[in-house]
Image 1 (cartoon, helix red, strand yellow):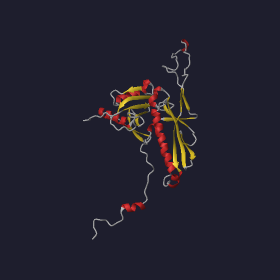
Image 2: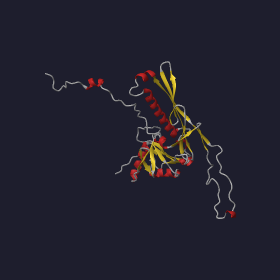
Image 3: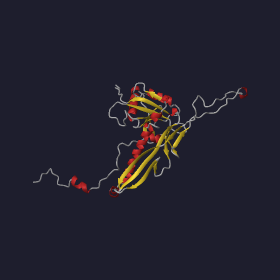
Image 4: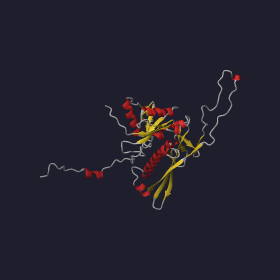
Length: 314
């Protein structure tokens, strides 16, 4: 007599080879929203060079007379002096070569085009690097190019409301955004909770951000913690940026080359390089980018921010 506990039916293992599997596109876990690159203003260039012409700084660009009767005093004369050697920003190229076996493309491109998916993931990788360079480049990165007088040390290590207020004194002319690693934002929120001043939130460009003094704190993992995007330990040091963005505001702007051949996005080029004797198709992907700080007070940096301070709120 058969065992009543054994189900005499087709099993899942036997049936699954006949079933249609619903598949996703390739999922790339290292991708981020890239809020910094989305929120700062970008300017397209015609010839890959951007010159920042500055006025020589002083209390006022030109002496003027304030008098009810100008006939009784000499009106000051002069002109507004410019820097004689203004800084020029040349676009940098971030490039990679993508190879795709044409036999794979021919045979395994349903339901997703293999070449298109490979290019899409490669483009995302370039954009991640582009945002990282805007922050960390030795040439034009915001961290390295902040003026000495625009750098502030934390009072005690953890980012406090007082520290962010100090940054605001450095970028008080229409500040746009704080940028910080998610761990630094969490550390700031803990300090606010400790003091009983929880920050309010705001919705911008489809994202929800906490704010301080009405200025959004925008997360980016390109502001590294101890040199890492994703640190494993609880403690670590990082930086927080406060930025005014926009050319009209004499702020921080991103730069890109417009109208590049094979354009697939802002300053992004995808070019087919041909097929070799082994049937491998090759594509050159490049993004041309830089960033400029139009005035020293467009950017301030809070340095030595400790992200590992925790509190007992009881």
